[in-house]
Image 1 (tube, helix red, strand yellow):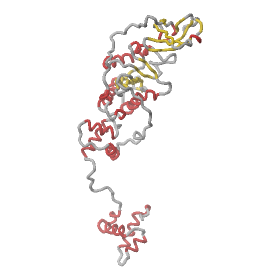
Image 2 (tube, helix red, strand yellow):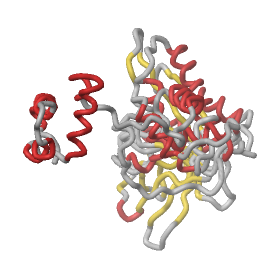
Image 3 (cartoon, helix red, strand yellow):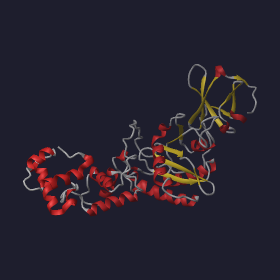
Image 4 (cartoon, helix red, strand yellow):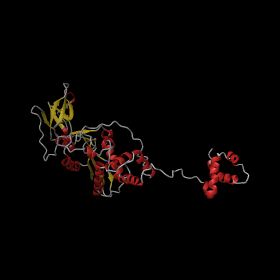
Length: 383
């Protein structure tokens, strides 16, 4: 039976002193102190060799651990952990070391044990993640996701990180430190991306400006993308999980860069974003990609960025109307409001059902639907 915890040292000292008296029945004394004879003689031997200090508890750590990871390997694990800003776990670190040609890389559980032993394991980050059903496009450039990560203050102004991610490969096409969220700023950033990587088939974004608004989900920026031949889609309002990959990327950016660095200028932000993007695309194993890197899964688009926008053309039999001020168009003496962003642009009307409903197309994409039965007369104000 173990010693009572509150008087551990005093009981041990009392026992060895009583047991050292001449003529004492040591086995009976052990019984009275509720310890086995083996434990009793152990404390007597330690007391004889070391005095009172020999009665203190000793580490149970083995003197020899032949299966313990070599110090050089532990140093390599710790170095890669620090290079990742303390964010990568056992699986990612193991894959990085293997890609570097390191032989006999420990198992992920062993690497996690090394991190724990050195106090480098963030328990909050290691918590079991919530499981979501994940959807992925079959090939690169079928869908890009675009978003503004939450802006943050600088000594002068604010930084608005613009992120663009390929849905299939998770390849970060852009991480741009912007001074605002205006259309001109986003178009400038996207031109550079399109010139380097080509055009995607579709882009997904939320419903906020500059690619969405209260009046209509299509804006000046959306129409520019549509004219380039890109299909523009928006996530469901108040459902950020629709852009789950981009949201997760933004979280990683915030954790590994924004929270860890003292950023003072947009130029400094961009340098840090570029370093992060290179590491994310080229080095960091991605768990959703079976620990491959995004760059190993991505291929540039075969569709080049055009020097000039092609004119807007519709088939000869299409019903074409020009959108007027306030986003209104007229058909058969009736007026329909579509979107202010379409003002001055020609659109095509296509019947979509025999019940009087028409779809409004801008270039290749349906941007609105109108109901002839519910439309009002042509009188309206230019709101």
